[in-house]
Image (tube, rainbow, N blue to C red; front, top):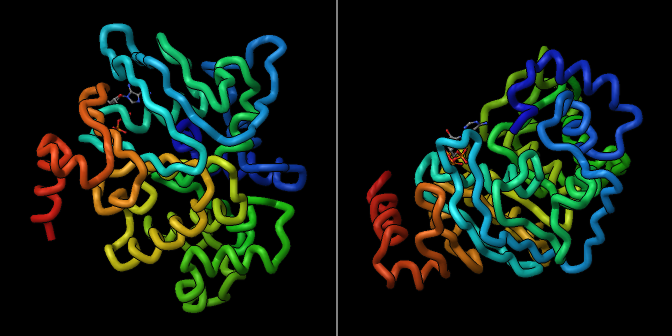
Length: 293
Ligand code: ATP
């Protein structure tokens, strides 16, 4: 995602500039998108969210013309469903998320939320309803408490504490020299990948957006932490439409639908058990992962 390519000191600058007036984390995307590839169409409408149904309709996409990335991808996520996308590295999973956020437009086909083409709606209203736990989380040079509050700047202290607890950050924080007041990020304490992901999850818990995207959300965690985080995610994702991009199949066995992407094409989809019975690429991937420690 674009913000990850920005130097951290620049991010820190932006953060300080906007912290006071920020309504949501999506404002940061907006501010960082200095030269956006994709801008709102003239007279773009705000998204009117009703149920939270997401539809990818025959979507194809390339970054460079000579190299197609997605080919005629169609699937829907029904309101409240959890849909997972799995597949080898480079299959195009994160690209699906970038298109959903409208960082790019599809080369053909369209993506809609509750029947509204994301091409026609304002990016601000789009990003307001979607919360993402990204692969890599940006931490600001501030206390861990304020870094969590960043998910919803007007949250009360009590709500921030609750989010910290639900994201299983409590034990980790208790070991820090100044507890929740410890400065982390840019010039403070550096957190591990797994700890940063928990901060991202706590932010998302605080924000509770109607649509949630988890992009390899638990990839940096050991398997014990992963299980507790997954429990937290399951809890917050109830009644929320969620899209999970995953490498580890153990994280998606409970999904309502699992989409298997291979070189930008959907090669299989279904529930975990169905896919195992089909004995196709998902079943092969599952067997390989079961043999790994
Ligand atoms: P991973 O599991 O490794 O994260 P992925 O399935 O999420 O992979 P994508 O990140 O969607 O894959 O990338 C799909 C393809 O598009 C890759 O070959 C990647 O090199 C290419 N790609 C991704 N971002 C860009 C970009 N900004 N410009 C050009 N090519 C890109």
